[in-house]
Length: 492
Ligand SMILES: *[C@@H]1O[C@H](CO)[C@@H](O)[C@H](O)[C@H]1NC(C)=O
Ligand SMILES: *[C@@H]1O[C@H](CO)[C@@H](O)[C@H](O)[C@H]1NC(C)=O
Ligand SMILES: *[C@@H]1O[C@H](CO)[C@@H](O)[C@H](O)[C@H]1NC(C)=O
Ligand SMILES: *[C@@H]1O[C@H](CO)[C@@H](O)[C@H](O)[C@H]1NC(C)=O
Ligand SMILES: *[C@@H]1O[C@H](CO)[C@@H](O)[C@H](O)[C@H]1NC(C)=O
Ligand SMILES: *[C@@H]1O[C@H](CO)[C@@H](O)[C@H](O)[C@H]1NC(C)=O
Ligand SMILES: *[C@@H]1O[C@H](CO)[C@@H](O)[C@H](O)[C@H]1NC(C)=O
Ligand SMILES: CC(=O)N[C@H]1CO[C@H](CO)[C@@H](O)[C@@H]1O
Image 1 (cartoon, rainbow, N blue to C red):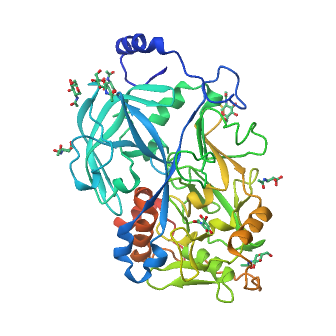
Image 2 (cartoon, helix red, strand yellow; image 1 turned 180 degrees about the vertical axis):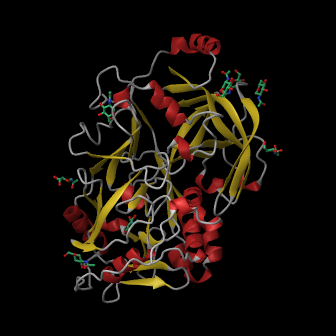
Image 3 (cartoon, protein in one colour; image 1 turned 30 degrees about the vertical axis):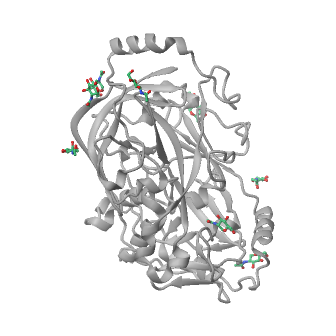
């Protein structure tokens, strides 16, 4: 076991626990760490992709059941707390670690593993913890215990014990909580109570190894080889060196400190034609800001831009906006190459989406309509675009914490070859019967995005699952209160 020290932890206790586990030795990371010296303590953690069915979506969308009753997916790993093992969803769009405790008796948390303090090492506090989601809530109190992630143990790690969850449908995914991997500034548990698991692990790493890497695969279940989550090393099955990665400093736009894994979005194209992007609503941002978020399923952007995108993609009847849900639907055989241009001036390059990711047919679409993988939403106040799993499945991403020489960085490696993807799409969906779109792109003047229709947000949250609900709540705070002036620029 590798032993780590959470801030504020007493040395005497460390010594005792070190003695207790010294005989176990240190597990070797799977595979040789790439781009890291030997002796580096990087590791790989098994991650699985779980499909979840949101039955409650159907109750809201009676008329669109066949389309909307689609399956979401979540990426889950096991964490150790005390001597118990609990499955949690990995979420780069939030920063707290929470799990349901044995005191959780609400029906919502039935049938998932609960934390019992069976090792007797839990120290609870009276500090309350509460997070409100669009579709539910979690509450409880803050506690301290030994938390293990892969071969690492962090003693006296702060986390939240949920004694009540509502509306989250934990049993549909089977997860006991969420592990947030965003910045300390975003955490509900304040740094003065205790720093995040991510900060604590990073603090113990060599400066050059302070990163974690994600590859989100399309396969389901534990046997999925395509998904990968590593700390302090690249997964040699995906990339053996940093060649090809583009590194961009994390954007601080609109915030006083780093809050989310966000970076400039410099363009969006459809079959090689640029879609004009609305100016950023984030104060001090020169171009639109995109937030990378494993906890959100779809890609969300300003309604004006997304409408323009589907207006072109759907020429000839290939796309429609469902009036009941305000969500875009696309003919399942509509082929397209969509590219996102991400990064600052020096690092910017194109990342193609697999054509199968721009349409959503999971869960079936008997009438030939798929759900668009890109949807409009105007309520985001931490970024202009939210790039969820639909985007992230097309890249290998490294998330680097700050060190003495660099600010936090995002590394991106393109994994989707657009022409191969198109060929695969055609094999799966058949030829595109509609002609390619024609005409030049209409460039809209900047319009106000302040008027948010509550309907799409609600549908999105039910569709994207509760994790996105968590993120959406954080990113869409504006919906619930007066817009913080500092976060918004008003366009006219
Ligand atoms: C655990 O951390 C908290 C907050 O940092 C601190 O108050 C407490 O004394 C620590 N407990 C131990 C056993 O070190
Ligand atoms: C945890 O440790 C306690 C005390 O040593 C033991 O009774 C219990 O069975 C252990 N639980 C697990 C899940 O290993
Ligand atoms: C955890 O268990 C130990 C041993 O039974 C006990 O001393 C401690 O108070 C428990 N912690 C909480 C918060 O219940
Ligand atoms: C849950 O935790 C909160 C905050 O600590 C506390 O007020 C409440 O009594 C607890 N409820 C149960 C059922 O333990
Ligand atoms: C800081 O991190 C960056 C990015 O991972 C790395 O290139 C650099 O070498 C690190 N600095 C030090 C002093 O290790
Ligand atoms: C990623 O981009 C590079 C440079 O454009 C290209 O050579 C490489 O083939 C791309 N990788 C994939 C998987 O398409
Ligand atoms: C995009 O290009 C492909 C390949 O040429 C074509 O089949 C498809 O219809 C085009 N899609 C649109 C939306 O124009
Ligand atoms: C985002 C998404 O779900 N895309 C789907 C498009 O359709 C194929 C099947 O034809 C699915 O495998 C993709 O997941």
